[in-house]
Image 1 (cartoon, helix red, strand yellow):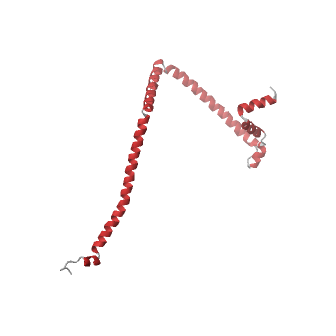
Image 2 (cartoon, rainbow, N blue to C red):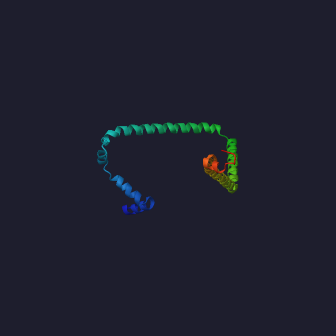
Image 3 (cartoon, rainbow, N blue to C red):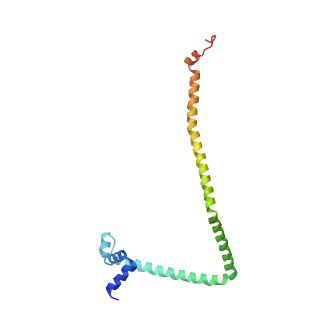
Length: 161
């Protein structure tokens, strides 16, 4: 396949943007970028990169060994009855899920009604709280009104002085 055909296929599979980003990455002058950010020379990082790569390989080898040992142990433990029990459990869970789906509309309506009730109660309490302020003001006004001298003088009975 020639270069043009390869580019056409790459554009179709990966998209033009990815190709441009890859081209930009491949043309990057890493030494220049490292100097620009004030980092050490790339060669100073090589030993650490190699060490970490080797440690990663070691870690992956240990993980593969653990997985193989786990598979060997599970192969001795897991049996047909366990699989049948798991299947039965999963069927029950699916039935439960389907029952929840079947009654979802009713549950949603119930939840909406409960929310509306709570909203109405909350609104009522807020209205009562507002009225309490006015009731206190009215009581204070009545109290002051009833002890006012001018009012007492107006409503004095004949013998009171």
